[in-house]
Image (cartoon, rainbow, N blue to C red):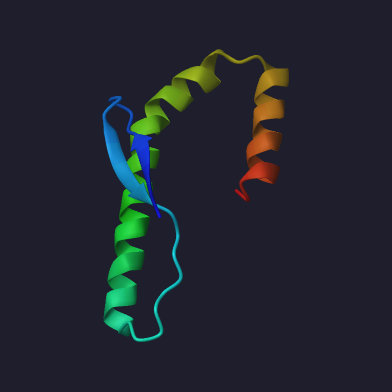
Length: 77
């Protein structure tokens, strides 16, 4: 399934949702897909990290605690 997503620059780009690996796909192809997925995720994280750090720096202690709890319980960090 292809959706449209916006990157941090606002440009629209296609993205794919997770799809099951076909049974006839080679191990090498599956590993390549995983590498691409992880690389894309890391690039996205690196793109938003400076903005997140700037926001986190201006939160008060209660807000930081609430955000820490949310991320720890909501995303499995």
